[in-house]
Length: 233
Length: 309
Image (cartoon, rainbow over all chains, first blue to last red; front, side, top):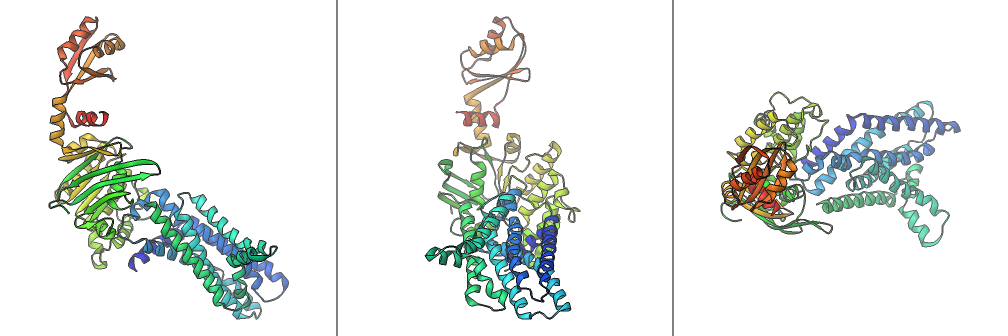
């Protein structure tokens, strides 16, 4: 556990104490504010239309924050050293996921000001706000796991970020495209898409199936990362 | 593990796609020995080292460090090794002390001993006073010292140093060499280097790799003695047309190669080569012979003989 914490702390520090990390978090917070302004145009104290696009933004943020996990270490050569430490691949993967997840959660905390503002000026239902954040954290960790896996497969900062974003957007919009399809393909694409698993969180319900989906995505990402690390050796 | 052996590679092979980078490499390092790993670029030195330290898996063969089989018990083997990679492999955004503390954590140094371990490794690598400095702001020489300090953080019995003086100026090179020499008194060291003078100074025994295979694994003295018996090397300063000199010397019996190097000609030949015959050929061609000397057999001549044969 100490090793996982050490790796996570190192990555967290590298993200938070860098212009890149601060820029990502600031951009995320600013965009969430813009989304809130757009959402409040309806003159209703409800935030489900605000949470929806926030999930897409979390996917993009995860793409950016996870490039530091392995791609940046590969670029600077420090991965070579890391792989010679008496650390198991699972400890390494867990540390990387934990570090990026905490960094992402930190960015999510900055958005709390939005529901607080709405609560000051109105009486929104607190249930969907709570489940919305639970959903954002769950989805965020799953997206981070996908990002860490892509990051492990490349040494290019840009490739890692754009490939993760492409994978997550393809999954997300696969669900949208599925609406125009029928049969088994529609069922598969709909299930695979995170967009079809966030609706419950937006409505204020916690569904085990949705939670299982995001946990499964996270586990899949972790296994792929482990496999990529094994292939590197 | 063979008795009296700290590191053992046996029949180690590694392919990258269809290219065989290292083929059937076997050698041992004895406890307390400083072993040099030599070879031209692309000979497989770094690949061999990476398989030893665990960042690459061999396709065939076995690697043992102490009593640990590096493939079956990789963590145990890695705990016994301190590794200084060829490239910096550092975090430029971290302070020296923070980086070393991080390495100590990953290396499993108990919390109560981390401060002492960091201080000890900093002193051993000549980094006293640099603790709060950011690694990215240090000179290349100091970054090499940081890389060495992290290799020493857990006080390992085996040190693996991949080109420890690469890119350093002569003063820094001497410093690092002295450091390695000092460390070699209490540890087993595998040192990869391009600098033959460095290897001659620090190592008693060398393993020469060529095209991914072991070309020789001998004591430095054995290799140079072998080279002395097999080859003659002459250095000449000739006045007149150098091209003519190269041609006439090349025609002398026993001459294998004539090279122009900074206004000098370096002649390499078999043991039967007569220096007088070379001098006579130069004079007979109407050229002036300003200087001619026989260059003693060195690790360089032995090395060249091995990798060019």
